[in-house]
Every structure is written in C-alpha cells, then in structure tokens.
Image (cartoon, rainbow, N blue to C red; front, side, top):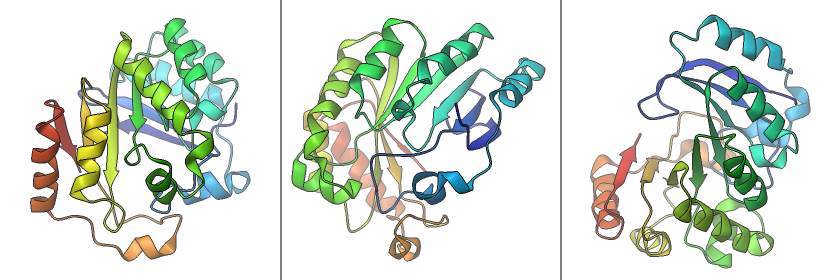
Length: 235
C-alpha cells in the first residue's frame, strides 16, 4: 500500500469528527478542477509515507482522533484497500472512504465486511454520459452504470454516507442540481461544495476561476432542498 499524503489532524474532512487523512495515488478520472494534480498525474514523484507511520500517529493520539479518512486519487482502485481498512479498524479507529463510485464491488465488499463506517461519494454531474464526461474529463460511458450502482448500494444499505457535488462555474448550472437530486431521491445526506480557487488544479485554466458567490450557493441549496430535504452546503 503506497500512501502519498498524510494530514495528521483535520476538522473538516468528516463532519463532527476529528480525523487523520491519508491520500492514495492514481485516479481513473481527469476532472479539470481537481485539486490533487500530482496525486493523479505524477504520483511516482511523490514520497511514500509508511503505513506504520500513520498507525503510530493514530496510536499516540487516540485520545483526540476519532477515525481515519482514506481519500485520493481514487482509493477503490487499490486492491489492498480492504487490508488497509482492516488494519485501521483493528486499532480501534473508525474509517471513512472517499470515492468517485466507479468500483461498486469494492464499496459493497467493505460495507459487507464492516470495514468502513462512512462513505462519501462524489456525484460529479447529472448521470448522463455527455455531462458526466464533460465534468470528469474522460469518457464516462464505461463506468456511469457502476456509479449508479454504487449510489444505490448506499441508498439501500445501512452504512452512514453522504453524496456530494463540487459546484464549478462553467461546468454546473441550476438545472444540473435539479437533475442530480431527482436521481438521488431518498438520499440521507447531500452536500454541495463550492469550488476552491486557491489550489493548483489539474487544468491550469481553473486556477483563475472564481468560485460561486454566497448568494449563488444559497440558491443552489434552496433548489436542492426541494427534492433532497437534507442538503447542506460546505465551503
């Protein structure tokens, strides 16, 4: 298991919890607004952080840390993700996995084996091939049905979860929120995240893009809540 990034303490990656965060390399998408450019495109140039280092930190700080967030990149691309989750669970910590939803078998397996306590699934766009391909930067035809399957696994299952969309100017409009919400009706928690312009993005053009205003995000939120009642804004 290659770990390419480690945040010792985070108050923002898992609502109501203090967590540590690790970043796993590689991704099967190329979202132009992605903040983790090197992690996606050049992970081999990043130093490797040992799992033992992470475990030792968790052990030494178990009074303060509630759990570990596993993000990326796309964590479910890693075949030894279950092994990693099992190690962390055996230490007595909760586990959250961030995913783009393209590996429903992995997510289902983690849930079934009780190796994950919380799943955050990024719904990039309305669930159509054209729009999803535009937002995620690759042809979505090969994995769109898998994303729909992962969504359904979470909607039907018992594990805690959130579905979330990062709102990006030039890529998202009000009608996109309406279409997404219609597709995820019954969702226990939907999160709208505002695009950040203070990080190096995969496509350099997005670094100079201004995020949506507070009023625009408020309007998105109001629209979403008409369909998915428990929608919250983040960022």
